[in-house]
Image 1 (cartoon, helix red, strand yellow):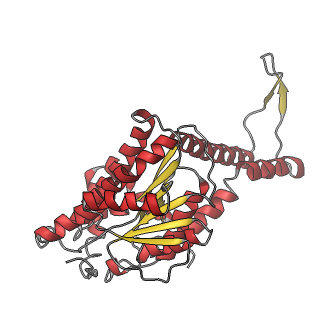
Image 2 (image 1 turned 180 degrees about the vertical axis):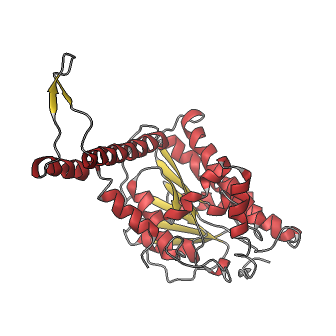
Length: 352
């Protein structure tokens, strides 16, 4: 299905490509009656362009300026997220940990990363749902248990090596409104989605800091920017996951003086997994339902780029982060529009 993201990508690579737009503008000048007219000037620049420009050239200049502005913005964000520091990765030698890699998004990520030949380590409390190749290692662990995480990290370092990349993918959603959720539901959600991320960071980031090399990628959610009725606890944990990402990113630079250690965050919208069975959101041009393979490919591409990134997918999911700066009536209106999405959610419950 073609989505708005595909359309925006096409526009970005064609109409808003400043080099293509400049060629188009030159073609208009040379092959039509719409011309740039140069006039002598007494200033530092010997010539100036006569104004007003023909309307079509005015539009062309605006398109070029917009394309340059977008690319300058991206370059500044890329430099900020990567602290202006370059680094190189050898994917024959890198060791990648994927938490929650036994099934769903994690499994798709593991299989994609393993296809390049890297050693990939799965940490999950559940059994693998796929036949693992020889370069994939599996360790059973409850990520909400501090001692268990550190014990398995020590075991991985001894048996496989020190991981240089981590994908914090493990997550759980019990699919209940707050007043219906049990104490166990809420403790489990925060335990896996937040404490599990923090314990994983504490177990594996020190070696990356020591080497000033590595990549820690956190899977959050669109709901972390705009909570959805029926999954308040889940949305709260994903908002916290975004804060963990932002905090770790600045701590690597300022507290630990390890600017080359990459921190990335991915905020997807609805993904077709067992955890979101029954979700009522339509798959359409604006917000297509994602498959685990879509996330696996995106996550792998972020790691393989060697660059820290802060992404939302699909493209229309970028509508959520700015809601914090919008008037309340707009934010409430957006939440009202999605109020029934989770009313029939029946997620699987691998942990009781």
